[in-house]
Amino acid sequence: MHSSDPHDSTGQQYRTRGENTDQQQAAQNRSKSADEIADAYAEVADKLARWRQLDRLFAGRYRRRQFEHADGRVLDVACGTGRNFRYLPSSSDVVGIDISDEMLVYARSELDRLELDGTVHRMDAQALDFPDDSFDTVISSFSTCTFPDPIAALREMERVCTPEGQILLLEHSRSHAAPLAWLQDWRADAHYEKNGCRLNHEPLEAVGQAALPVEKASTAFFGLVTAIDATPR
Ligand SMILES: C[S@@+](CC[C@H](N)C(=O)[O-])C[C@H]1O[C@@H](n2cnc3c(N)ncnc32)[C@H](O)[C@@H]1O
Image (tube, rainbow, N blue to C red):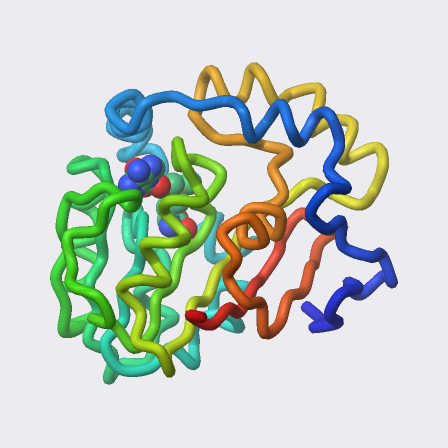
């Protein structure tokens, strides 16, 4: 993955606020409730846990690059089954939160397996139950696509991050390759209905709307993966 703000490795310029397509606008407007999303992930938790080798193969290198320099007290927002934990420095003091108890069962056992110092909690990313400035690093992966209100969740990440801390995001995004983007747009409604995930969303758009200062952003894999380093204001 190459950093090239505001272009990706192919020279494609990022869409910025105000430039989003009708399809993306439609994606942003879709919203299931947090309870509906929790139910959707309760159903697929076992399957996602079984697919961890596949995830390592396809997403492992992006997770490693984005999260290996996480520092100090680390909050993983919407940690799911804990797939990021193995890429964090072994000295990390990790707290994982997720809306789904079923996903958290796997996250807890991943912490134990890795012998990492940490805890996991059921919590809504849009209303984090932590005081301001509680974490040195806030990380989140493949999550803003599912939050009913991604802007609220991003603002909560900023609130709980220390002023000198960092917010590291890894997200899927709408491809800059026309056929792939077309496929994403075509499947978006059905995918959202089934999985509660906005397949063609644009994470940089959400980060812009939350007014989070972006330090670095890059895309990879035809623009399907976006990594964003942001800092609290
Ligand atoms: C696609 S999974 C990603 C999980 C994990 N971050 C990863 O990279 O494998 C999305 C996760 O977001 C969680 N989630 C969705 N809405 C949430 C919310 N409002 N608060 C906390 N977690 C939420 C889901 O339960 C699910 O575990």
